[in-house]
Length: 476
Image 1 (cartoon, helix red, strand yellow):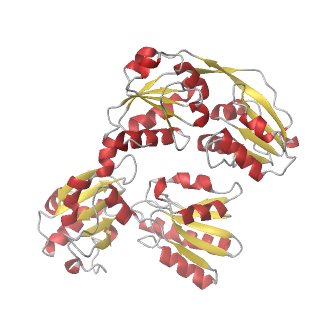
Image 2 (image 1 turned 90 degrees about the vertical axis):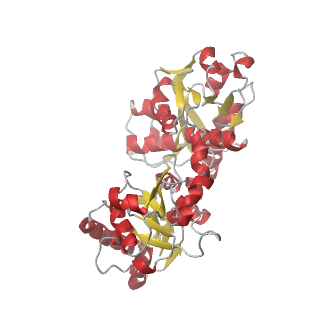
Image 3 (image 1 turned 180 degrees about the vertical axis):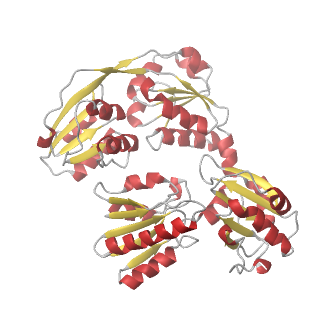
């Protein structure tokens, strides 16, 4: 059929192109290696075949073997399927996209090259380093660090422009610096080393060619180096790291079930925030029976807890119908528990899930939802109109009181469910003066009585992004 060689962008999922997302949503086969952001795979259809082709750093023999396997997979599947070959950054900038296109050409398989936002320009941009600037340069060179210690290198080191971007070069940066200095570059030439660019882990270390030649640098991949006068603009224009810095030290209260706290707390801590767990709901086990699932065309899960509770009762690994989940965490656990793919709506809430199911399932389909007894009535009211809808409550929720003292000592409160919203709304409104209240979505917001902002993406990560944008610019 056709092979699309697609760039996945540098890391920030907001930097994935619309065309890349559209192709992933239509793919029959996705061949991928180490992606910039694995969440991209969540967009794939439920029946899409995922083929991982990983490579190991510093192992050229292994890399060559894997590349041959990639080429073989492209040809094998590309003859009769819709294939997306997904590559981090841009596939044509040190990504072997051109070589893989030639493989398609030789095999007589139609192909398209779909550029992505390259880390070569986006990572410096997120570090406040424009790779070109009228006051400094009108040209820039992109160089692979893998070439730096080779005799007979194809890189003409003495003819490179003043400003250079080095990719995949952290292990050989000392050799690269010596090469450049050997061709006349001053030892005090500024260098910006940008680690894990466009992600929450991003940090920039400023150095010089002389220091790098003598000492190297204490950073692990992925690192991109910008060498030359433009690197110094980091000191003026470093917007993203300043935005991240606004979160460091913030004291935030997280309200959710105690059993789900650990992973969420780790996310907040990765941004440098002090996260205070305040469980406001407790999952209560109830006795339930799962009906004969083979009689249903689709199963619906609206929480991670629901998947866990059902998994304790029944093995669904042989279920042949459709699976639907409210969001990526629940979807991921379905795959982990039973090896099944589930799909979600564009919005990770009951409204988005209901719309998605309506679009995917023919009228009259028999649908079973396995969820909390305290869940909202949106799904049954929406799906019962055109489908044979039923549900089984698989656990109960007991609300716990909010701790006013924790709220008073915080900068922000993150509210992740309607039940949590009801509990914190029982605290005196004055306790929230000067606090930022972030709701995970519209359904939760309905039960908040104090001023608040609603996350644009209905996940814990989406709440963090909303809070970061709000304290940076005043807009969520």
